[in-house]
Amino acid sequence: QEQLVESGGGLVQAGGSLRLSCTASGLTLDDWAIGWFRQAPGKEREGVACTSDRGGRTYYADSVKGRFTVSRDNAKNTVYLYMNSLKPEDAAVYYCARDFSDYGCAHLESVSFDLWGQGAPVTVSS
Image (cartoon, rainbow, N blue to C red; front, side, top):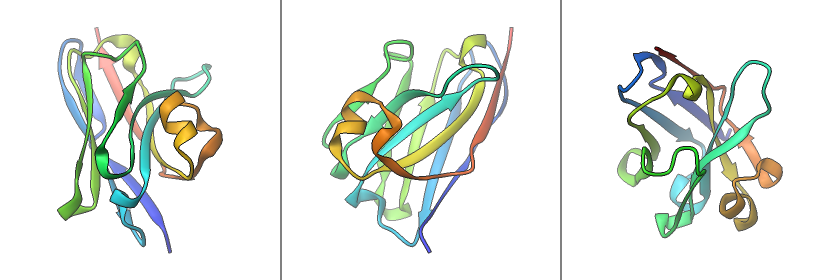
């Protein structure tokens, strides 16, 4: 059974850093584009970052560009989201997801993501 599991969420002070992990079972992550999305209470889900299959290209939302980095560890079948200089507005539940077409990854749109993790909450205190 294919599954994605996020970990690494938690509470951090503004200006701090966190690393989220997205670990897969039943599939090889390097074969797929993998995206990170977030949803804060009362807000719509938004795309944050994405890495294309084989990690050749990465895409970031303007709101996180220069602060967040997405990377892969193929030996661990894991995709990471490194989050630096965190702001209170970054607080949300973060999800990783698999993209079955390149469109969703390049545009950070969830329409073509078909497999989702359960989410990892991130809280940023001011």
